[in-house]
Length: 279
Image (tube, rainbow, N blue to C red; front, side, top):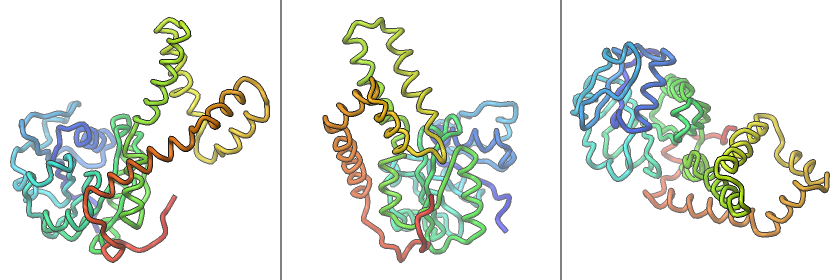
C-alpha cells in the first residue's frame, strides 16, 4: 500500500508549490508533520494554525532523505540546480515540457510522474493531467490521483505528446481568458464606457456567464442555439468567426504546444503506461 507517505515539495515557496502544500493541509490529505518544504529562504510560506509543524529546509537532498514522495515544483530552467538523488522514491514533476526520461536521468528515480497543474490550484480549481513512467506502481498512481484531486480535477494520460498539448491548453491557466477579457475591455473603453463599468461588464461575461459552460454541457449546442435566435449575439458570434477567431485560437495552441514539445527530447510510449487518453 501507499497510503500515508511523507511528502516533500522542492520549490515549496513558489506559487505552485505553496498552493499545493496549502491544499494538502487544508484538505487534511496528510498531517503537517508529514510535509517537508524546501526553498532558498527557509521561510514558511503557509498559513493556518498548524503551519509550524511543517518541516522547512534549504537542502534538497535532506528533503529527499526524509520523504517517500518528492514533488518538483520548480521552473524547467532551474531543474539542473536541484541536484538530488531520489532512487526508489516517487518523483512527481510539475515542470512544463521536461520529459520523463530527463526527470529520471537527473533524479535517479524510475518511479516518475509528469503532471501539469495551473494557477487555478490557488483556488482549488486546477485541472491537472498526468503521465506515469512504467515503474510507477498502481498504488502510487492511485495516490497521485488523490493528491491532484486536493487542488482540482485530474486525468491520467498515456503519451508525452498528449501531456505536451495539454500543457499548452490548460497549463496556461487564466492566460487565454485574460487575453479575451483584455480585448473586450479595450473595445468597451473605446466606445466611451467608464472604466469601472467596463471592467464589471467584462468580468460578468468572462468570469460569471462562462460558468454556464459546465460538465455535460454541449458548447456546440449552446452556440447553435444562440446563433439561431438571429439577434445581437448571433451578429457578434458570426462576425468573430468570419474574422478568423477559430484560426487564431488554433495558431496560438499550435505555437504553445510546439514550445512545450521542444523543451526536451520526445519520449516514445515505451517509457509510459499504455492506454487510451481518459476524459
